[in-house]
Amino acid sequence: MRSDRIGRAIVFYKPYRVIIPNEREKDISHTPVQQNGTIWYTDGSKTEQSTGAGATNRDPGKLATVFQAEITAISACAQEMTRRSYTNKRIQIISDSQAALKAMGAVEIHSQAVKDCMDSLTQLAEHNSITLKWMRGHQGHERNERANFLAKKGAEVPLIGPEPTCGLAYRTSRRAIKDLLRRSSLENHPGTSQ
Image 1 (cartoon, one colour):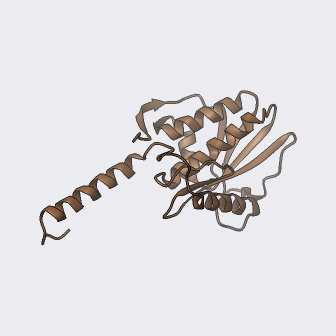
Image 2: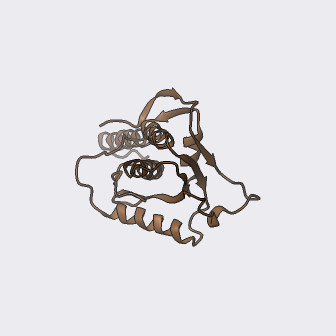
Image 3: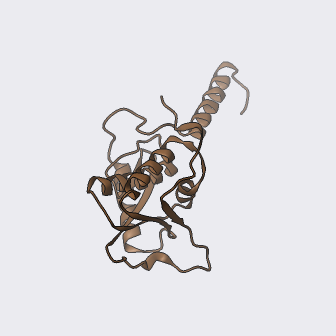
């Protein structure tokens, strides 16, 4: 099973902007569409059965983390706009995940999903101006709620194909190994407590 963790990668060049307003800054939920622009909203969701990514029909699978679902949604959004041959547009991608947006702005990365997303954004930015913006989620904003709905729907649809569709998160692997060792210890040494 492949891992999402990669060796340290340093990425200085990012032809896109990341905006995470603080509490005192303007609420971006009413961001106007700029001339020759477009706005996309993304979201990720995880249930007991699987994970889903809104603004895309790609299913990151049940082993993905919510963070990976958020990254998958942003990446798929960029890939879809590239597929549609968007050119000379002012593109805004709105996410309610600060962690995903901070990862997109980071110089040092350790996740293949993040690197792939950066690559998708960089490709889209060759012919467009891209801004990633954070907005507080679950505040009743129609399009953010729609992205959340799509992500939850994506998590409900059974995955067709092998798992994992994205690399296993390092922490997920560590937790699974610790759980396995604890269960094995309890089976081999009955009467001991956790």
